[in-house]
Amino acid sequence: MTLHKKITSAPKADLHVHLEGTIEAAMMFDLAARNGVTLPWASVAELHAAFGFRNLPQFLEIFYAGLQVLRTERDFFDVTYAFLKRSAADNVVYTEIHFSPQGHLERGVTWTEMMDGILGAATKAERELGIRARPILGLQRHRSEEDALKVIDAALPWKQDIVALGMGGAELGNPPSRFVNAYARARELGWKCTCHAGEEGPHGYVTEALDLLKVDRIDHGIRSIDNPALVARLARERMPLTVCPYSNVRLQAVPALASVPLIELLDAGCLATVNTDDPSYFEAYLNENFLGTARALNLTEVQTRTLIENGFKGAFLDEGQCTAYLDRLDAHWT
Ligand SMILES: [Zn+2]
Image 1 (cartoon, rainbow, N blue to C red):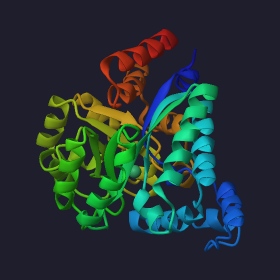
Image 2: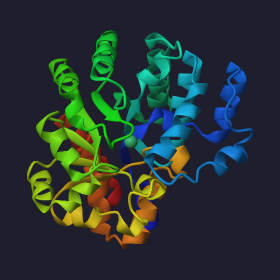
Image 3: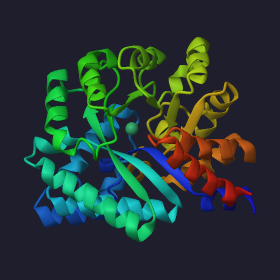
Image 4: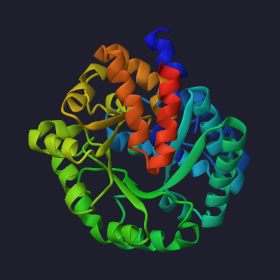
């Protein structure tokens, strides 16, 4: 079997993806029509033309405009199910999906509509497509910590359904240190914790997320490469890093896929993984993230398999569940 075929057909995990970043352009226009929402673009072609963002803030402007189409339980169901169906076609068997309640509640969407839609689609997809999905409550870091604490408390009826607290959005100027109490609250609730750090922001944000937020995982983390002592620490602590190669390129955090520091991280012993982030906007689902990276970095079969394995090892799964997925991967690979 060629490496290409091994990658595409292997069971895989996607640990870093935003529900609102999976809305395909055609579906966005369908939902806009269904809900009477006026988008800032006149057509799918015009939206695609707007994909020439040069940095995270420019991307976020489009991302926040696009998510306005999500209004009802049915919308959340349809978008979640469409993403899971597309991921299952890439042989993704497990995913942890960030969703941004703060971006929806302010438009009058209720927690029940969001959660019933997302969880309903997850249940159907697990039954019909064999892919398991669990939601991560994704805070928006440009808002206040007071608002973060409020949204965490409002999520309590779904405490068991939500697997972790995460935080995304504009990194620069919004360091992890602003959210110490919110993360302490999440840990009290028994949630795992993850935080975007070190894609747009500096490696110091990764250190803050580790020391102050006491996270179990770092989303992105590629700027860690600028601090050898930090890389050594991440390796020693086996801290998962959810690297998103096409995101790094499209947001110009790196000049090209060949500059994504996956090999350096693996060589240092870090638990680096490959993920999608916002696949409809970055126009790459999980297979393409693996294939593009394997081509650009000339990954060996061993390196590729390690990255796929790390996707399960870095997941918020108990040991038995993780081993079951690794056994599946092993049976496939050999
Ligand atoms: Zn992200």
